[in-house]
Image 1 (cartoon, rainbow, N blue to C red):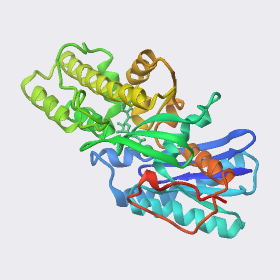
Image 2: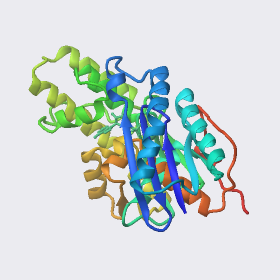
Image 3: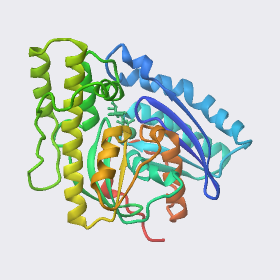
Length: 333
Ligand code: KG4
Ligand code: ZN
């Protein structure tokens, strides 16, 4: 079966075709970053309009690339996300499903991130611990199997990607700031400043990043704006974030006696995080390739394929701005 995946929850229009036998067969992405950069963040109305402009041509592009007239099913991101942007993908998926007479599967955006490592050559077996780190979410999830998720901890305030973006803004870097901050950090000394490792010794598995952001803000105000000083701040901030994420993840892994960890979401592209987790965890760590850490259509296509082969019954149109990851169990056939 070939599944068309559509991702339109935020500022990337992602489209992909996933073959349950052959894996990923075509993929296209249009990033709206330039459209939103002038505003310093995503403008929902602009996002919806651009998805509308880009989606159909991208679908035509992947079908042509795969030499295919139509897929066997369509999976789309139904939430959580910007509701107008979600409606564009949901409307397109349901319209095409009607025209092509094929099933349509609504996908939870974070489940998409969770299964992104399944697109790689050696996918993880269940169960595994997942560290989901994106611009909107920071979560530790125990994954028993597809659809069976226990959220062990999440952020009490800012998401980690948001902390990267806000800190990058303080340092005068563009939007989205995560990758730019990580690049600047490469030339800095990560021991120059001792920023807090929030909640590192607290019970439970929750995170908090707003205090760290404030500590950096105070430092930026008093420090000079020399490039070397900014690089030191970036490196020290990144080190504090990575130390915190790794410590909390290892604690959850010990608690769950996890043999496998997966890391996904935009911040999963962070090289220091990947290196430290692989170095410090005695079991296996799985990552999506870098371009499938950030939002993309391939993760939605593979999530749809997994759900369909697990016996999920297709449903009608769906767009949810908020959606609990723990409500996704597939009803027994
Ligand atoms: O998963 P994603 O594409 O979108 C959401 O669902 O939020 O994640 C985007 C986030 C942004 O905050 C971005 O700054 C961050 O991921 N990010 C990074 C890196 N690449 C992307 N943060 C740190 N280091 C990176 N290399
Ligand atoms: Zn995402």
